[in-house]
Length: 404
Ligand SMILES: [Zn+2]
Ligand SMILES: [Zn+2]
Image 1 (cartoon, protein in one colour):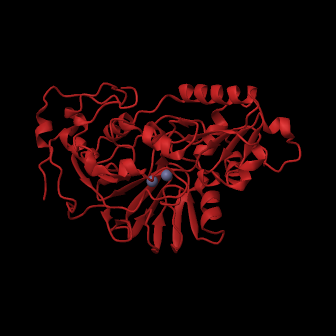
Image 2: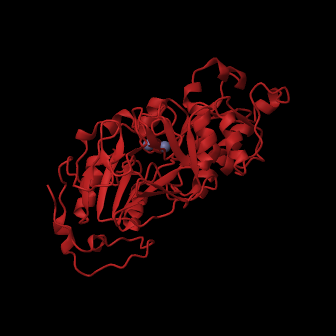
Image 3: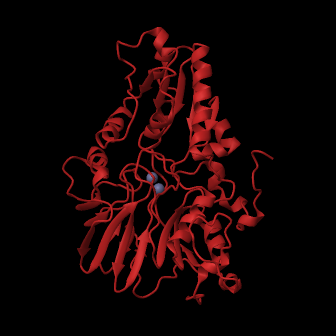
């Protein structure tokens, strides 16, 4: 079913941020156009369609982040739910290359692009643009027959110093993630976040307790390293994290020096002041024993916004830190593209589709298999998964259950 389009769908979004600099029109008639179309609402000539193997570009005959093995795959970034093994040809940003080779094998056939560089494949102009998510993460811009589509992959708007910051790309149709597409998700600023983490580490160090901070090995761990005050004490990186630190350092990202837990330079006193960066899988492992009987522990994730998730993780502290856009960030990014048509992939899809439709955009869901990564935070915790318990209109959601 085709929904009529307002000539300027952005008119309905009288945003408070105004950061994108888009002109607003006085009339609000566009809001009446909103309609959450059927999931199968694809049209003749669409540059990307949702197929059983993944997001497929028919004129170019290639896929974007396919979840089943295909001939040609454009990969947005190295998280395991987006970069899967078994494709015959990979295309990705050059900074993703060492990550992909490490995870998928040195022998993969990989073509690399710089940001903004254009390759033409069967008449489709393909280019990659910074997504601000992890090192080498890219939005994929496709141009064909006068149309421009952008597939976002995962993205985050606030610059964090460990990867190229998100860049809005104008397009007719935008394919967006919606991992944290609920109004309750609003992130603290980088400065506020790291002030909190530093204070926690300092307090523990003064009390002679190691500080174990769980974070996913690709992206989050390096952001923590880059942002903390390394003068507080030594920093220990888990063996699953250190090789990725090396990739970031080689790409020119400033990270403080890190020790492996087995480093003979670390005596008992040093370990008692240490910040330990480890993947969630290290929790309850014997590896932790070397940090004393009672280390302080914390988890860094966007899901820490939910009290129930913190409780289930069973850690002392939860730091709200995500490499995905929060609710205002998703809105600003979508507006910034100027797109009149939006497909929503993973996360809070129905809520986001409904909200976008209320803004006068033609929005619909794309069924994908993203979000089940073992080392990213795309996976929703149980209370977020239970979408039927949530109202489908964002305006009906409590704004902030945590501070209420
Ligand atoms: Zn990701
Ligand atoms: Zn994802």
